[in-house]
Image (cartoon, rainbow, N blue to C red; front, top):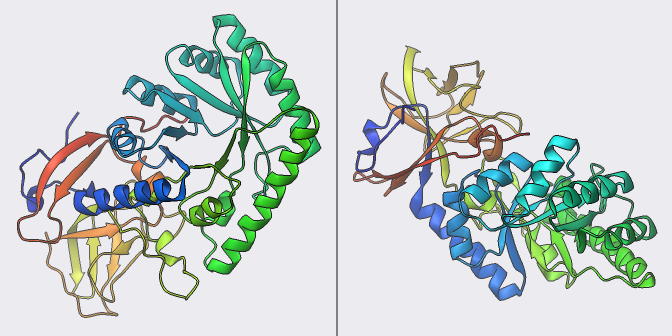
Length: 377
């Protein structure tokens, strides 16, 4: 498979569109979250749906992460094949083929999965029994996102009882992730949403205690709210993912004092070339919808004051330069911060890791495969 770069290559020679990692910023982000988790006394189970890379997961584990989260069985398979020995599928799994693959994977690594329905408990037990595996199972509760999840309190406790009575399943705790809270812009509103999630977890813990069970693990949290979950005294594991890269949408979140949510640096870019310059105020780049996800807004042109990216089509993106002083030449290359890092990553085969980005000596240090690209089944 053709790669856009080779190690040692000057940045200017990298072919485009390319998915670039600023290795210096990326490593600072890794260390910052690892330090936070250690200081807060909580586990970090980094979310691999962001990067889809065992190479990156290994670096997270080297800094203290206990394992990774995945969203799909195929994603987990890639992680285990890549040497990651502890994986939680922080999602429900439906369908006999997937359940059988999940159970088989549990014979090779420590594997957990979430449930929110009694029938799914029976399906998991049957799949695990067929191969003689043991699965960790977390009961997912709906803490406000109105997506997956059993009702908190007694309904969740009844589900946990079913898991605990199953011969090939272990009740491991509660999945309590509030995904909708991650991109709420104001800090006070994010804090209030997580405070309510904590109340629902506490309600569920009391219901579990009434039937003789305990949630050894309460896991959840994301890059937008992890400080709130860590401070709760209830959550003991964080599932942050986007912190390693950040994206333009997370950059719009605000802290309590109204300042930008800037704890983590933009470390992921799509490198693009100006392929056409019809007029000085309009540059057309070679990165469109097949190189950038725009579900959470347009990418941010990096270090091009006043420039705006808009009107993406399959292979084209338009940079409007009329609102600023930046002017570009045909053939010049630019950096774009994705609006949403996770689906943008899934559009590319390779990461190009660059050392010294922003300097004249920027060079390619490594090329990693996006190993779980397309692992959505």
